Length: 457
Ligand SMILES: Nc1ncnc2c1ncn2[C@@H]1O[C@H](COP(=O)(O)OP(=O)(O)OP(=O)(O)O)[C@@H](O)[C@H]1O
Ligand SMILES: [Mg+2]
Image 1 (spheres, rainbow, N blue to C red):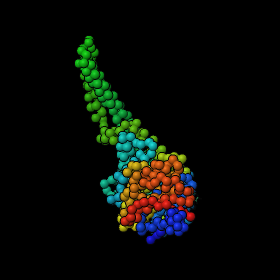
Image 2: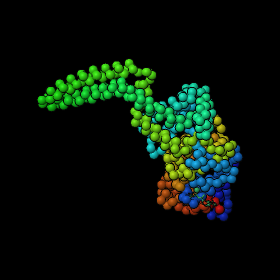
Image 3: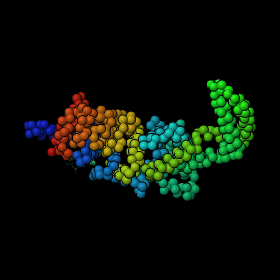
């Protein structure tokens, strides 16, 4: 079983001059989740390196390197930027009948968009759901038929070549991309314009119907007013409106009959309802185009090859917090699914996610993948190593469940809150020196959880 030396017991060293080593023991800790909190320069990256290099060599590791400073010997590094164009096609399906499929992929895209500062409205979400599902259908991929979920993943360049060569049959064999969704949505938008409204008959029917509705509303308003405060000489007005209502009713019925007689696909109404209003559809197209422009969802899988330690340098994405969040959340959800699909591990650690700058990704929300990993993924052999400037940037779920918490030097202003959150004495936090001392809590099987002061020297 793998052991990692954290340091020596601080008080034993101070009082008795004895070095009593404190180890992180893979087989003893109740789970493999690790939290490291400390101010800038206190040693978070140092401890990330210690844990990653100390892991058994059959554990796969995904490092989300936001600062681009977590160098690890033997790690395969990929830079994600607008010029490398590496990304993950969000429409590639996990083909497992229990853990994968169209509905989950659609939800993941929506979840990723909703994790940003600009959430989708209810109508937008509905429209996006239809757009994604229909784009899959065009490729012969159906939510309720797992056999249809198996397709090939093509890169951006391959897709472009297929289009250039008009190789439609090859295009049916690959998963759609976000660009396909945008193209499809633009076609739908046109159809909405051209459909009911573009035809003279459709426009007349809608116009007459609208008139009829407005007249009826005015009439009802006037009736209510007269009931409240007497007729007051408004009888003429009322009579006029009644006549108008009759006329617009007749016109509406007539123009509607004309429109119905000239319909041709039989799907005009369904389409109009499904894609809501043109405004909503257009706003969803804009969101999709922006998403596509970020590049993180480009269908160009990063060349990690078969590397065991994969380092994703996300520094160029850091300019947009939304992109960064979407990328990490989306990728973590895919990893969670892969690990669930592999099945339970019997307590063995199989894969570790490393995430620095927890402040950017933290939330109390139960669907946040950090919270999902820490509360549900132990039995599937997936753990997370989360680092942040302060315990305030760890969720309650994380603090409660993480098997190991390593607290380094904290900023003065964080002492009180951290002490309360971690159930540790404030004075035990005050004396932590950057790169020299820390407090570690390891939940070990059958033992009470408490913090121990350690010296790294
Ligand atoms: N326990 C330690 N033993 C020896 N050197 C250490 C230890 N902890 C940190 N250092 C060294 O201190 C320096 C700063 O540490 P590190 O980069 O890990 O800080 P950090 O908490 O990640 O800071 P930031 O928040 O700015 O990323 C590094 O040069 C690192 O090698
Ligand atoms: Mg660091």
